[in-house]
Amino acid sequence: MTNPALMFFGDPHGDLESVIAAVERCRPEAIVLLGDVQAQQPLHIELSPIMDLTEIYWIPGNHDTDSNADYDHLWESELSGRNLHGRIAEIAGYKVAGLGGIFRTKIWDPRRPTKEAAFQSSDAMRRTMKREERWRDGISRKHRSSIFPDDYQQLLRNGPADILVTHEAPSAHPHGWQAIDELAEALGAQLVVHGHHHQNIDYVAEGLVTIAAPFRAFGVDMGSHLAWPLDPPEEIQPAGPSQDLLDLVTQVFGSGAQGWLNKPHRLFNGRTPAAFAAEGGSEKVRSMLIAIQHGGVV
Image 1 (cartoon, rainbow, N blue to C red):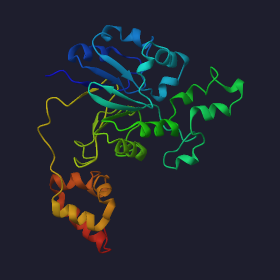
Image 2 (tube, helix red, strand yellow; image 1 turned 60 degrees about the vertical axis):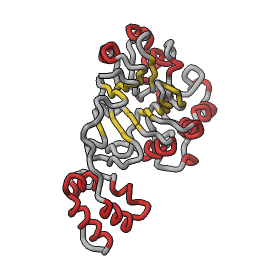
Image 3 (tube, rainbow, N blue to C red; image 1 turned 120 degrees about the horizontal axis):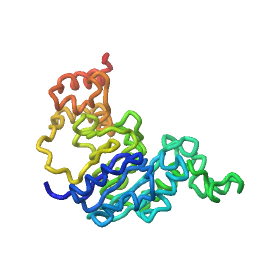
C-alpha cells in the first residue's frame, strides 16, 4: 500500500490514540480532523508523537465549544493556525476548503436566503451584544461553532477547491443540507468529506448518489478514517443508467433530471433511481417515468 496523500479522521471526541496509530502506520502527507475533536490537552501536545510525521489540520465541530477546555485546547493550541474553517489551503497537492461547525437556525437557516439570516457574521452578532453578555469580549462560546453566512461566502470568494471538508453532511444524508452540495459544486470540488453523524458512508457505494454526481462524498465515523486517494483503486465501478433511460429522465424532468436520479425514493427501497436502475431495475424506473410523463398513477 502506498502512503496516502491525505487522511481524514472522524470525530475523535477526546480519543486521539487511533489518529496517532493510523498516522504512524500509514505515514500520510497530511491529515484533517473533521470536528468534535474535544482534545483533553492542547492539540499539539495530544498529537506530539506525530507532529514530525505529518501536517495536521482541523475544522471545529459543534462539541468543540461545549466547554472552555474544549475550546482552548483547539483555538489556543500551537495548531490553531491549522484551522481550515472558512478558508482554502494547499495541502498535499490539493486545494482543501473547510467549513466547520453546524447550521444553527437561530443564526442562519441555509434553506432561506442569506439576507434573512439573523446575523451575517460573528462580528455583526457581537455588535448587538452588551459587554456583559460577551464571552471573552466576543460572541458566546457556543456560537463560535455556528456557521454564519459570511463564513460560507468567504469560501465562495476564495474558490476553487479540489476537496471540501465539513462537519455537516451533504443533502444525500437524511440530516444533510443542500447548502453543502451547492458550496461543493460552486467550488468545483471533486470530493466532500464530513463527520458529525458517526457513520462511515460511501455515498456512491450505498446508492445514495450516482457516479455521475458532481462530487464523491464520504462520511467518516468517530474513531475511523478515510485515506485519499483511495488505495487500492476501486475495482468495481457501478454502471450508470442506460442512455435511453437518461434521455427519458431528461424529457420528463428537464434541468431537474440529475436531481431526480440522485434522490432516494421509497418505491425503490430507499435507493436512488439511478442506483436502482444500475442494479437491474431499469424497467421499474422506466415505468415510473412513463407514468409521470403521462399523468398516470405511480
